[in-house]
Amino acid sequence: MDININILTDQEAAILRETIAASHRIVVCAHKSPDGDAVGSSLGWAGYLRSLGKKVDICVPDMIPDSISWLPGAAGILRYDRQPELVQRAFDEADLVCCVDFSSEGRLDEMDHLLLGCKTQRVIIDHHLSPNLEAKLLVSQPHASSASDLVFRVVWQLGGFPQMDQTWATCIYCGMMTDTGGFTYNSTQPYIYYIICLLLTKNIDKDKIYRNVFNNARIPAVRFRGYLMNEKLQVVEGLHASFYTVTRKELKKYDFIKGDLEGLVNVPLTIKGHKLSISLREDTDIDNRILVSLRSVDDFPCNKMAAEFFNGGGHRNASGGKLLCSIQEAEQIALKAILAYADMLK
Image 1 (cartoon, rainbow, N blue to C red):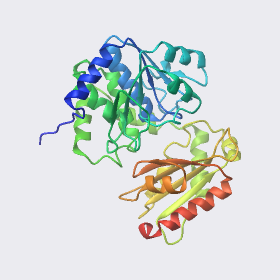
Image 2 (cartoon, rainbow, N blue to C red):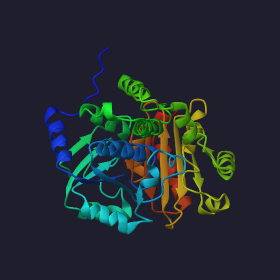
Image 3 (cartoon, helix red, strand yellow):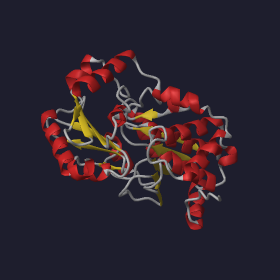
Image 4 (cartoon, one colour):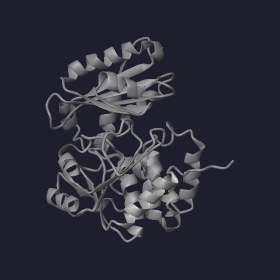
């Protein structure tokens, strides 16, 4: 079977080549609360740009979870919450900004003004729905498994694969793996495994990558996760759906740090026949703000529910949102959402 992984038209490829060739100082930025795909795709794209002799700064709004902080090059990423002056300087000096794994205003929070105020050219590589940022070139594929998937395909089409080394290959694989739950959802297209085959030729250690990401928990985090599944999980009677809440008090009790609960929302989906899992977590900094994560299997539309009830969106099987209310009110909204989709959850 012939698998074509090119995603750019000839004209788009020419525009991107010319834009990169004319640039010398490039900012690559990813969204707030950067996950494995945001970091992996940013590092992979930066690796390609640096192979062309470009000066590249990767900028993110805030902390990178411990589970992905080991990625090659992650230590050099600039954090706006810790290094605002360096991030400001990077944007001021940039002649090209590349937005990776996001394409909408508001995804950078406190860093938004730097992106929107920067008058230089912009390139976007993303797989989320409804992009609204202007760009000289928008590489948008909502059906792609991840932004890392898209970065690989762009690098491949631009002829950068021979220069790819183990470090950026590791980052790209990590991004693809994390955004598909270890290739358990949104990962049925054959081309994905063709890309994995190509990455393996760069001597990545896929087993070690998995262990570093998923088998990297602190003892308090293991206890916290067990507590939440044992004491807080609410399975809706008669439906294959559940939700759980996480309060600020509980976060403090278990010495929570970012990444401790990564992937926990997928655990209820291991229940036989389960179709939907919702996590409702109180924000650690802002009162009455609830962070919502939704995960599903098969054809259940998380993104539709997230848009309708949780001021959010995302992908069919993995979405997120935010609520401005108490945790008790959030529970009622989650229950209302589940009941509204009862016919699909029986």
